[in-house]
Amino acid sequence: MKIHHVALILLALACTPARADDALYRQFGETQGLTRIVDDMYDTVLADPRTAPYFDNAPVRRIKQKLVEQFCVLLDGPCVYTGRPMRRTHEGQNIDRAAFNALVEDLQAAMDKNGVPFHAQNKLLARLAPMYRDVQDRE
Image (cartoon, rainbow, N blue to C red):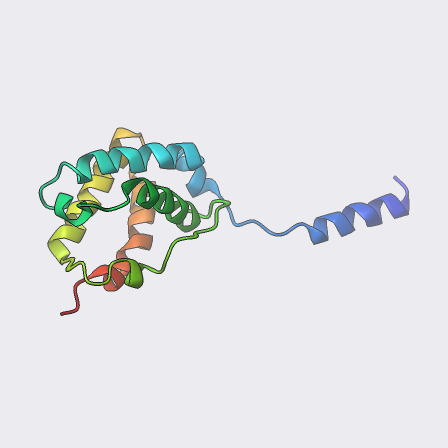
């Protein structure tokens, strides 16, 4: 290979943005898998008396779409989260630890249903856990 070809290849590689390792994202089935997980989770969340009241008159379709984006970002996928900050989104909803934990249980059931490995589930949950501070009731 000629020197200028090698230089062009190296230049192209240098200009390619670095991607985080997306192995975790792939374990969740990428965007298609995340969509199934979120759909299954919301089937349960909307039927669960511990969480359903929080979604009365809520734009569930939009929420699901933003949650898929958020999970994708948290799992190092190729997505951009376009939703509002968690603190602003949940302001005034009086979410307590019990409701937050119930939603987490419903998410775990959806991940189980969709065959997400336990260690991958734990990684996502560890990344979600700090968000409780932004969604909790502060009154």
